[in-house]
Image 1 (cartoon, rainbow, N blue to C red):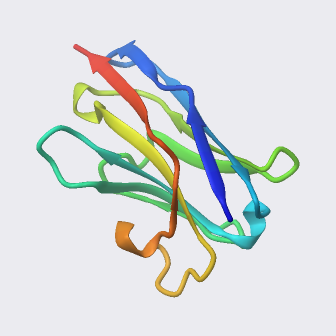
Image 2: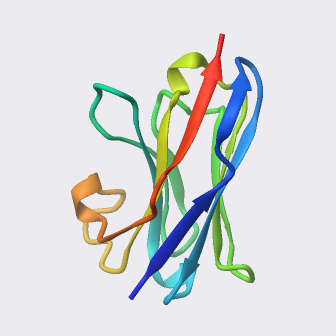
Length: 124
């Protein structure tokens, strides 16, 4: 059983930075494909950034060049470094994991394990 726990959310002014963490247990990160999703009020859940088991990464056009996904296998922790934050980045951010990774990066319903989410608020 995979368990995920996010931390690092908060409130920041536009242009600022935050780093989200997602501590994993049950499986090593390099056995899973991992992702960050976000959901703003009244909007659909959106994939933000993804990392495959071999370290390949990809991200949404809306965050390209501003957000970076990475992982520390020694700490079994996934990160999302968010720079140049905008008010439209305000959302609940959740990390997700999957063991099969058949259609990487995949849609949210293809990820089997989820953290509880952490709120990120960007003020203008």
